[in-house]
Image (cartoon, rainbow, N blue to C red; front, side):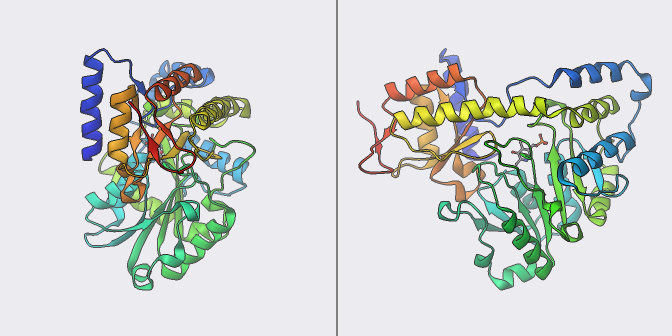
Length: 390
Ligand SMILES: *Cc1c(COP(=O)(O)O)cnc(C)c1O
């Protein structure tokens, strides 16, 4: 584990021992319950003994059909439930095992920095040579494809990417998806898109699926999860869709590793994918309220934080003279509020902290009150400068 997380965990434990009331906005762990119809479906499925044995390796046909039907409804994308969809024990499991299935030691793997750690940890464990694609605020945190040297693109085997993005909250226009498909085709690179935040979008914004782009299925796969959309992080249900050869490789590896998801949970997951929009809208509304509340509160402290169109995170610039680790540690020590240092997501995250919108507005108000009391704020004359008095 990265040093920063270990150090943060230690300090969190110590702060708790001292009786400090921690407000933990560090992890991306949804704080709400799964929708009631999904819980009811799980209970009913538990009562059925045919669900109690080993599930089929490739997942139940009815869950795979629910996945491909959802893609058809949501994106108008046609997928074969037998060869182009595979249930996973959460998308993190699949993202990492895909790396084991495809990467040989020394293979060049393109990974944005900052990014969700499994996008670089999987390739690293597989022995891949990671070429970081440094993302920049002036490019709206989009990958700059023109910045990738030709010889690197020529050697590269896989490109991982994720929009709407954890940790930056950035979204990518459809044009970008077209460009990245063209780039991958030209250089024969496997595209791995993580669409974890497909449904957590606000203000009318609709995230794009890689598979909506013509030809994407020839060179790409897309990972999905029920963790965030349906508050089901602990249930461990995700899936991958797209190129059948890539999916076949992952399936073969997984037959040697696991038996897939408990059939009762696959049955409940079907119910989740068939829920009317009102459930997803409720989840989005909660995050949107919290986003707006916190951004307004930060503004009152003189702190300008960009408003993300999707995800459950704010990506907050650190004071200029502080590293993200020092800033996160000082915020924790002074206020008991836990945020994640940006460098935990790779060197490109330095200079930022990630704030997860996983507490109700009354707790966020308490966090803001403590920030104010501790004088954690920016100076408006000297943008980016950190003022701490007393
Ligand atoms: C939270 C998150 C996931 C979810 O992983 P699961 O293993 O499905 O719970 C995947 N990708 C990103 C970018 C995330 O932020």
